[in-house]
Length: 233
Image (cartoon, rainbow, N blue to C red):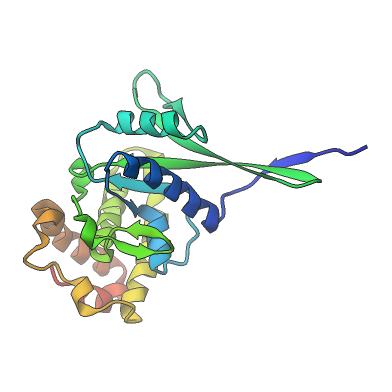
């Protein structure tokens, strides 16, 4: 008599890539340009931590974030939403993706959380699609604004009054040290580390506030100083 056992595990990089591609495919049908940010993008640039979820920026304000989530759920049944943990105080839905694999002896039940972001929220820049960096079949945000957003998250988490956000700062530090190590290893051309005159799409707030953040970070983590010196804002 055959039987099938099941268990849960974290998504692999390949599976995370597939989740991102599934969402990007749906958005493309609606002429919505999308790029990968967050830890998955950082991983593809060379960060040594394996990400746990997928973060995407949809370069449009024609739809709300909730409408974009509904679009994915409607057009691909592997996507689904659940209410926020603190509903009804928090009225947003959390987007997930079902990942299932099986063979004759076991099945693996996996899920992946996806954050859908938009320009203008949390100083996220509206990146022209021609500047997306294509890696592993995915459109990534350019390295410098990605790094500056990670730096912003580090400071925001440290300033938060919420313990669960404060705890994220430890991971932010690890990621930023890993990313600045890539700069020291000369993984990037000089032009990739400069905010040039045509960077109006980045937004003045993100660039101007990053100057102080860089100073505060390198004063605490001095081993990163040489890497930050190569950043031109």
